[in-house]
Figure (tube, rainbow, N blue to C red):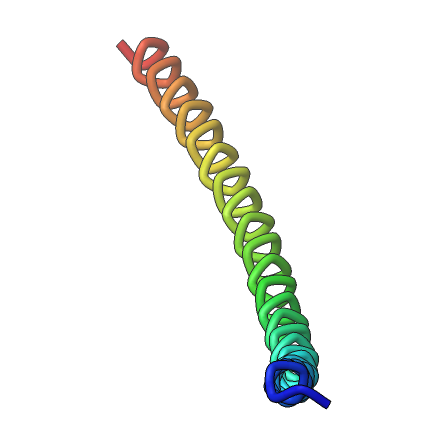
Length: 87
């Protein structure tokens, strides 16, 4: 075996081993990224549920305020009519 062939064989073997190690590490990193993204997805879904609940609460509150305004308008109209009759 020639020294050039021996050197090429050693270099190819070392390169192959390093690439296999890097590939295995890449698989572990991708698994961790997947776990992290699943956790982030859960957090986002939780915040979405909270946001929907808050939105529902605000819509109920605005409905209550609109009803109160209407009630005050009716009371004001009755008060104006009562004052007009008493004069």
